[in-house]
Length: 237
Image 1 (cartoon, one colour):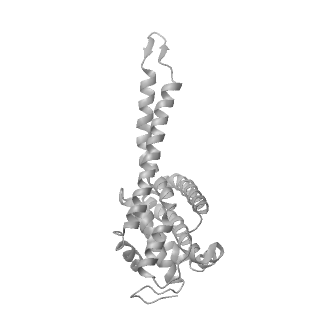
Image 2: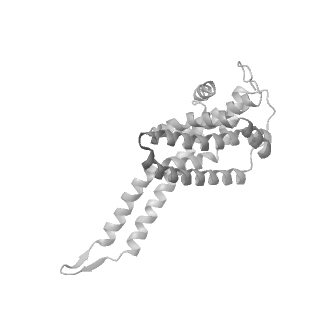
């Protein structure tokens, strides 16, 4: 698994990797900026210009204060939302990462068509919802596990990342049912690999690279478990 990870890391200079990463980040920043502007305008529209307080009288500028409070709120929320939103956007283009890996390391494989965009978007939205939901539950549990909180974070997200990225890599070659069967046979190894991917999620900025690195790593893992030989490396079942 470490070999899969370092092989994927060595390909980070690939232009297709950079394009997927920058596209995901660009869409994420654009969305968060648009939501911030919308909340700024909405707060100014809903909150009255002045407000009467007992013994004080009319107080002005309330709408301006409310609007800027919305901006501050979104800046704080962006720290939390940046990674899952970026992962959701980047997930739409991860098929390009898998294709780049196969072109470089598995050129003997027959070319395949791309996964339909509608199916990719559906899977990305579903994964985003599961990640947010499970991490909200884990956030509550953090208060009860004390110093083991980082371990819980890695284990929970490791399962989710392993499931998502292995499914993404396998479904291209085996279809959904075949991917499910192969994942079920190697669920333990996939979970461990996903946990290794989850560790960088704890590191700011580095966590933005996880979707691309994860997709490349699990493409190698899939082919290794499926018995495909990487150039210069033996295959293992």
